[in-house]
Length: 131
View 1 (cartoon, rainbow, N blue to C red):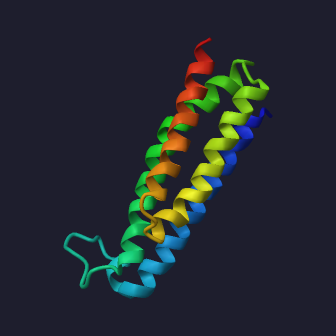
View 2: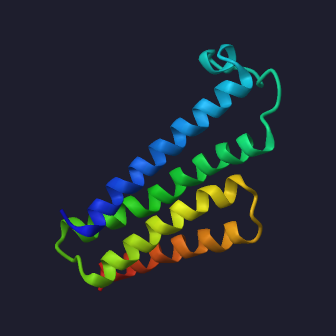
């Protein structure tokens, strides 16, 4: 397996871990009734700021995977893997690892700067796939 595909698998595991952590935290805050319901209405009480940020970081993680996954697959499955593309993939993963706690802790402007690093690593990987 190429480094890009390995990194993709690790990014998916990171995302799944984040989803699980958010689910546990939200269930503790809201109790089991609302999360197990069809959620047709608003929650019985607002989430804490940290839990709401965690929820938004889950959504952002989906968005980053939507961009990273096809690019990593293109590079990995077409035999275009190089040291440069592997480095971009690892930079993306490190940025995601740093982004999640930065978002949950509300670290401004670091959260946005870290997001930018991951975004540009994905962009660079996409460009590398084309050349």
